[in-house]
Image (cartoon, rainbow, N blue to C red; front, top):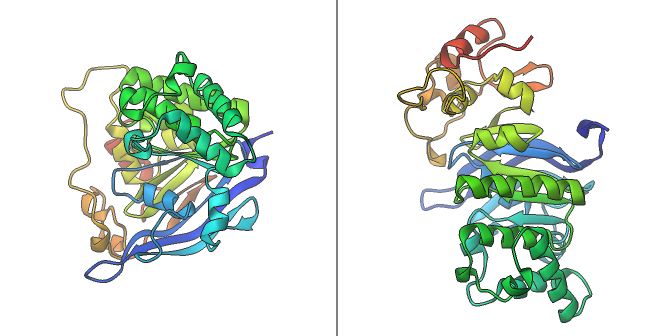
Length: 341
C-alpha cells in the first residue's frame, strides 16, 4: 500500500505561532499546513531559525501558554489536540507521540541514570512495576544498539558519549511504542559514522514498530537518504513540499535550489568552494507579508513584496512568483542538474 493510501495520522492546518516580546507579539510560524500518514517519513528541512522546531514543539504543547499563542487546527488520529488540557496532552505526549530532542545532554536529567529516566516514562503511561519497567529499559537500550545494556542502564548521562546519549533518548522516545516519532535534528551533534548508525536505526525502528516519523533537519543529504516526503521551510512558512524524489529532481523554489547547491557533489570536478546562500535568515520581527526569501534571492522582483502565489507541478507545490515557463532556465543557472524525463 502506498503511503498516501494509508490513514492520516497527523493533520496540521493553518498553524501559526506568536511569542510575546517587549515590542509586542512576534509571529515565528505562519500558516503552516501538512499531513503525516501512518508509517510515513516526512522531513521538514531548512536553516536554523526557519521555524522547524517551533512548529513541532507547538504540536506537542510544549510552549509556555503565558508567552506563546498557537492558532490553527491540529488533529491526531482524527481528534483535535491543539486545545487539549495539559493533563490530556501529557497522556498523548510520550505514549502516542515520542520526541527525540535535538540535544540529548540537555534532554536527559544529569542526576538520574538513563535507565531510571526511561523506566519513569514507561511507568507514567503504563500500569507496570518498577522492576518490569527497568527490564523494559534494558531491553530498549539493547534494541537501539548500546553494547552491554545491563550495565549502561545504570550510567548517568555524563558517563556516555554523544552517540550513546542520543541512542538513550531514542530508547526513551520508543519506550511506549508511539504511533508518531518526532526527531528534532537527531544527528546534528554526531560524527558521520554515528549519524549513519542513527539514521539506520530510525529506519529499522520504523520497520519494526510501524511508527510514522517527522524528521527535522537542515541536512539535505539526510533528507535524500531517509525521507519519503519533504517540506522545505523558510521564515516561518513552508515554501515547498512534495515527494522527496520529485523535489530533488525538479525543485521549484529558489531557496530549495540554494540548499541543494550547497551539497558537495559526489562526481565530476571537485569544487574549490561550495556555493552558499548570501545573507542571513531574517528574524521573525523582520518578516513582512511578502516572500521572506526575497532579500536573499537572485531572482526577486517587485511582485515578491506581496504574498507569493502557490505554484503547483503535479503533487509538488511552492510559494513563489516564478511561473512554469521561466523556472527551468533559472533553476539551471542556479543549480545545474539533469532534468528527469
